[in-house]
Image 1 (cartoon, rainbow, N blue to C red):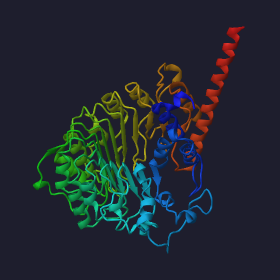
Image 2 (image 1 turned 120 degrees about the vertical axis):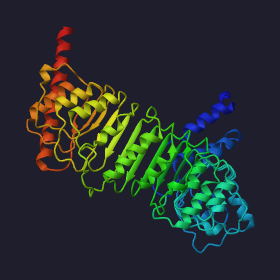
Image 3 (image 1 turned 180 degrees about the vertical axis):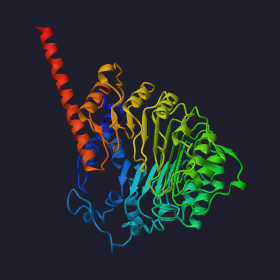
Image 4 (image 1 turned 45 degrees about the vertical axis):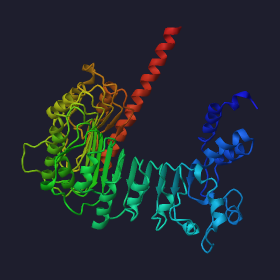
Length: 498
């Protein structure tokens, strides 16, 4: 053996590299990584412990551990390199088989439970047993009825659950170091479940990230006192509106990311209106229905709850098109965000979000956001484009870092001559013109080629065969211009070298 392999740090680095090998495999097939680590573990005593630790560190289900049980081993591995099997009708583990099952459980750091077909085999384990005493991450796809306690660990850092489990409180009490809690509920939660959720959240003292159904004020108040908390995402149906009259204004000093996926914006507005997020950098809201009255309140609450100097990313989306046009003709959604001077990305995709957007307003927006990288404005109600090429390039002069732009263009009105313009915006790479109408395809292709050299092709919407065909032709001519330019450059270089 080479002397370098005696150095534990070097050996661990080599084994860690082996552990990153990925190879295609079918369901139930043992991967090349696991086969390699198993071989290393049987090579010599020096290799055994570090290889075994990595071999058992990340587990997808408990079948490999059950394979350590003498009685079950031939049933599980009866197809050689595969361990797909069914445990229905098989008797639970007895006392000495439990010890075989637990032989390598202390090495497991990450565990995914895709199904609960084999849990009945563990019925003989004592209730207080920590099967995985050093487990850091637990992900359960299905509801482990009656068996969740077996998978808890005092070292648990990350936990993913598919519902609000009746034993949810035990996770917080048994795992005092829990940092990342995700509860993705596929259907509407009951009032009792949401009450249990709130009580359980208030037992968590070291959360860093939280994803769960809507919380009540008691839970929000508790979260405001967690200095470790950085990210909160709320997803689900709001059963009981938040009572803003009985809530004490709170500050979430360290939260940088706030996300909501709800039916309406009312819940979000209530949270923002009664809270302060002075460190907030990213805000996202997806609402099923967003009338303009709610949108206006949302924009106002967002500007009041955080300093305009911190927010960098804003996404507001709603796909329900049954929203009437705002009656106040002076309202312009995009202008509500002028005060967020540190914006890097802005995506507005809801009905009437581009109402009254014109060249002047786009210029003012770009001038307000000197650091903007991505701007996506997608209004399903917008029928006529008001941003011309002249207005676009005037605005682009104020945003040198912009690399992605989604906007409906007035490509019928050619109000710029690329031959008379020396300006080029070299950062823009992705241009989505939505369903913009077009007439002079050759002129548009020349404008894009001359002034947006990093745009390889234009993205366009799917509505209207003639629109799709026209932009497809623009892209074909754009590629032809680029190819000719490359060929001409090579000819010039060749001539200069002669």
